Length: 96
Image 1 (tube, helix red, strand yellow):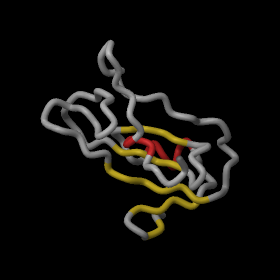
Image 2: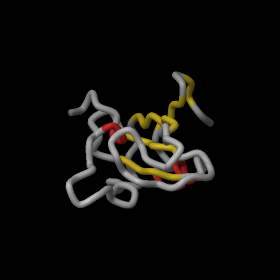
Image 3: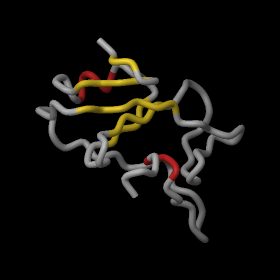
Image 4: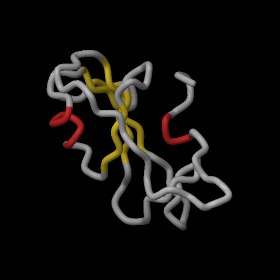
C-alpha cells in the first residue's frame, strides 16, 4: 500500500461514505520528507476512494513516503505548522 496515494484507498461501504478521512499525525519532531498533493474531488465533493469532503476550497493531502504521517487540510500552510522540521515537497519542488 505505500505506493498508493492515501486518498485513493477505497473507504466507501454498503453503509455509505465516511465524512473525510482520518489523518495520522504523530510526531511534530519528524524531520524527513513530506509530499503534498491536491486531492481531486468530484462535483459531489467525493475523493477517488469514496470519502466525502464537500465542495469549496482546494483539499490537500500531505504524507510521508511510508505513509506513517498523513494529514488532510484546506489550508496548505497548516502542513508546516504540524511538521515544522520536515522537508516538504510539492510538484517535485521543495517548499520554504
